[in-house]
Length: 373
Image 1 (tube, rainbow, N blue to C red):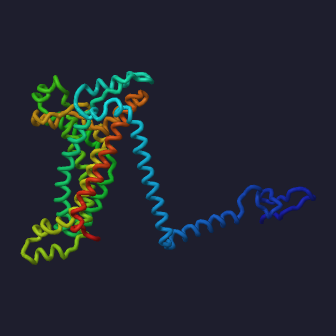
Image 2: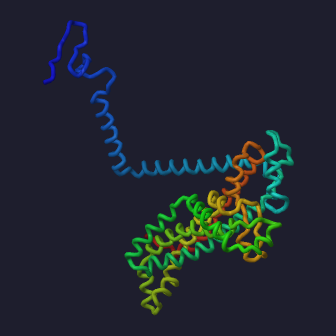
Image 3: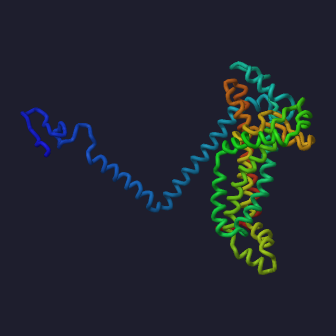
């Protein structure tokens, strides 16, 4: 049995078997009472009730408008910030820094060797090898990926059994969310050694040894992995559009005498062209901005692969704008190199804006074909 509470002389704190009790009902000083926890519960309950209840139209418009303005202001601030930091490169070179001429590795080295107050000559830059590498890898990946995505989407939605479709679509969405470093790790540990040891011949290595070293890391591996990375994104978007397309379109075409596959190609695929354009734009933006994977499997050389070299063209190393930012980020203590990296970022932002506007303009005449889910 619990010992009864003993009350000593006046002025002393009552004592119980469980410890000293406070004069305010047995609670120790400083502990939260039931009022504070119940108040927190009431606040959370009212907050959830407010979120569950439908918002008035005016309140919803103001909230969504405020969020849109905040996002727009953040994007504009980012563009202005990058543009200001990149301005020294444009001030000293204009847009000629995008063209050929000079040795990029030497120019970067000169920038890293400068002091806090670099001379004007330190800002000299010719970044064409990076621009060329970015355009080359992105173009190959987008062309291959778009063809694979369109054909795969037609098979998944129109020809595949329902059970297979239910399995494949979630897998495609999962592949679209895989981090790029995973693809880069597989490339550098599996594909690069395979290409260097089994595909690149000794004669090809000897023919290029005075120009560049062929290790297996280069354009071919980078383009293949980049294609694998961006294709699931396009497949997911095109599949959603094909699923949303009215089945009456294909049924009407079949009733007029077309076989099912011809009906899909002639009618359904024509109706989802806006979604195909949107998927291509999104995939291109992903390809242009990819940095980590390209840096791991491209060879990390500011070199221009030559198509006239034949098959060796796909084995030659390169570097892109995004991978160059990763490669040289440790030298940002040099003001000239810091401005150069911001110039690379500004060019990528400009490319993203051009893609967005271009995709919008391309979709304008296709709006009459757009489907509604």
